[in-house]
Length: 321
Ligand SMILES: Nc1nc2c(ncn2[C@@H]2O[C@H](COP(=O)(O)OP(=O)(O)OP(=O)(O)O)[C@@H](O)[C@H]2O)c(=O)[nH]1
Ligand SMILES: [Mg+2]
Image 1 (cartoon, helix red, strand yellow):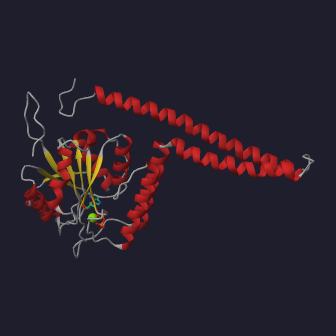
Image 2 (cartoon, helix red, strand yellow):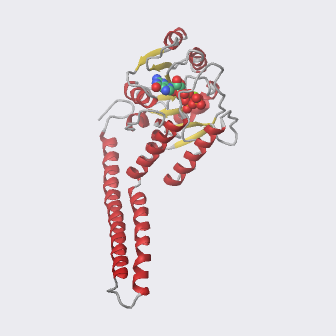
Image 3 (tube, protein in one colour):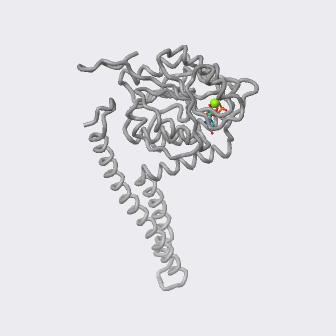
């Protein structure tokens, strides 16, 4: 597989497979071997967080390169992977042998051919045959509906850990979250930067006996929800503050109109109280809409700035200007 050759320097693209991994001794050797078999030219890098089992030894034995990250959490590991590894094409996959290695070429193709900046291995497309617990399916569907509604997209799988990403996307995403919120962060920040996303159906296997999930449904579900909430506020401020503002204005109208209609003598204490309530609610509402408008403009200007910085920054092939 190669990138389109440029006139002066035909070259083969460098592909890396990145595997965040914590205590996966039962499966890591197989995952490394499977990906090395599918992509003999690629480097397979296991990112460990101080596993207490034989993960490191088995990964090295299977031919992986090992990199370590001190800060615990999948989000921290993905930040390190994106900062420290240089490649043209990045494949990201879990070390628990739940994603099929034989779909990796289908995942890479759209990125290599320049059709997409990120392809997502979707476990929830009509063609996918995924073994998911009802809890996991419910959570995935919930977050999918929320993100599609807020960000006006039609993705089927927001939280997939199996992805292929191009160099430009990897190097332009500022990632901050620590844990399993990282997939939602990657998806939303890519969409908001105008990168092209494509989904490729994959089947999900269940974890093998004796291997343990690192996910804790309530804690991680709330973190993912918190991340979506913060990104909604930061990236869609007019919708976020504006819609709450309109609700306040509407709430203020009811006591205002009631106060005006219920009594011909507006000096009655109850009418005065309702009038104050109406003015208060409407003021808060107008203020929220104004905050939304200001942040919307600031956001747009930052988007323009980011776009210009990308134009004057180093080229994806490292040549610079
Ligand atoms: N390095 C590192 N890897 C992690 C950490 N937490 C999870 N991982 C890895 O991230 C991948 C995804 O974690 P999983 O526990 O499989 O989470 P999941 O795929 O969302 O959930 P299930 O497969 O349903 O259990 C696996 O390869 C884990 O080993 C961490 O703190 N550090
Ligand atoms: Mg998993």
